[in-house]
Length: 268
Image (cartoon, rainbow, N blue to C red; front, side, top):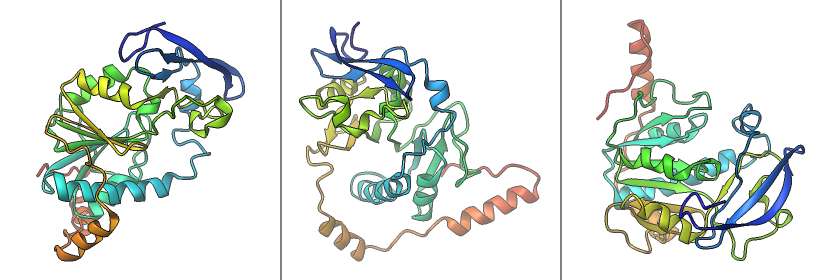
């Protein structure tokens, strides 16, 4: 079986019962180190609960992502641009970013939009978006090349999170991120595998070496994620905070409701 990212040979890393009943084989690439689970026939069952009940870090992760993205936008991107959160879950991150004054839109094929209704990105996704965010998404992808091909057509920047596979690759019992209890995590990336994946679509790559990563067709500093929290706090203290979209979004939804239609935000 060949690697879905670089097409090199793979070897079996481990076997396990996912969700307590599905036999799964974890294959590891001999070239780029990418690990994946082929033929995940249990995914329909696993996604009957889109946000699995063991995900106790859901709110904390969204708050961290908000702070990190505010820093990225203000120091590297156009704050007035339109952004897309891909596989956005219940929409908590989109709501948080709009609360901070940034025009974020929601897209998710599996999860109900609870927190930012009316601010969905209309299908088909056409862009261009200033940047696309995809937090805790890549480990769920059965075909990362196909997914990135779609996203690369509508943005020059993709900012995402997924935990890098430790080296050497740990056994299943020694790394919680394998997620054998819920079966939703089926792809695990090394730095090399992400560099090769982004390179296929003309992207440069930068990472914090652990959780946060970016694909960009623009020149990247290798220290893209290394701004200190002290410097960031000083930066925020000096600048005028962006006006929150909380009330503007509230008024827009009321306006659309009074006109008998679903609230749809105009693109900036």
